[in-house]
Image (cartoon, rainbow, N blue to C red):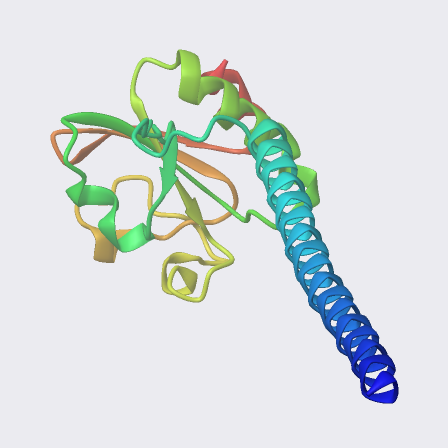
Length: 182
């Protein structure tokens, strides 16, 4: 009988030791799980902070984040086709015919720009280098009294002032056009 009491004490110690080791394993798993959750929340926090910073930087660099505020742009002068010179909406307007790509005509371009802000009449431009306008360009003498678009014969830089769809004033030459536009 003495042996059986000693054996049962040894068995109790083994069961208690096993229970303690199982409890330690459960605690270790719970601790690992809570550490993993904490790491996930930290990562999410860092990602949210970084994305917020990028958004704020973008708004700051690009400007206000307001898409409701639309401003209407006003074109001071516009390019038209030579064939539509006689049919513009305005009663009185000026049309300048010249080759936009000609570097010797930069004086006309800058005068057009200035006139578009300070000029008396609405200003239109015609690029005589465009394929659509080539039929109105001529190397011969220009027609200074055209009555309709088909009558246009433009030789070099030309300015025409229209009144009610009719030619009111006809000016040829770079210097004369620049002088008129000032």
